[in-house]
Length: 259
Image (tube, rainbow, N blue to C red):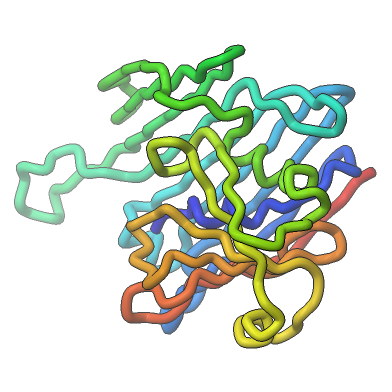
C-alpha cells in the first residue's frame, strides 16, 4: 500500500517551532492498514519536514513490510518555505533467492529506493539510488523537464499563503516537485456545502477536494476530500471508492504544537 496520498493532509501553518501529528489510515472492510507520523521543525530561518508512513496489519504482510519516509529541508523567507533538498525513501523486504521454490528455504533482505531532488536557481536535479541487502545496485541522475518552487511537502505547508488564506473559489492549479506527473501539477477544488454534508459528519473549518494523480489507488475519480480544522491541521481525509472495498480514510489521532 502506498501512502503518498497522506501528504495531502499537511495543510499546516508556520506559527510554531514544532508541529507534530499522527494519523491512522483505514481501508473499507479491512480496517486499519497504516500509521503516518508527520513533523515540522523550524529554527531561525530554516526548516525540516519529516513524514514516516508505516503499513500495519494485512497491508504490511502483503507489501513486504513496506515503509516510506519523506523529508524536505530548506529556508524560510517571509513566512514561506523554500525547499533546497527533497527526499523520498521506500524500504521493503524482498526475497534474496527467488529461484528457490520451497518457501521454507526462502531468505529475505532489505530493499531500499532513494529519490533525492536538489533545487537550484532555475532547475531541479533528480538523483535515484537503489540498494539491496546493504549494497548499492543502481544509481542515476537527471534534470527535471520542469521547474517548481515547491516540493510535495512544502507546497501543502505553504498552502494557506498560496491560497490567500484558503480563498479558493474554483479549480486551482499548484505545482510541486515530486508530484506524480510530467509537470508537477496539482489540482485543488473547494467543496460545496451540500458535498461537505454528504462526505463529512461534522461540517466545519476549510474543506477541499485534491485530485490525486496516483493510478495505483484505482479510485473512481481520484478525489481526495480533506477537512482542515482551526489549527490548520487536517482532521480527516477520504479517498472515495477505491477498487471494490470502499474508501481509504485517514483520521487525526494525536497532535502536538510547540510555539
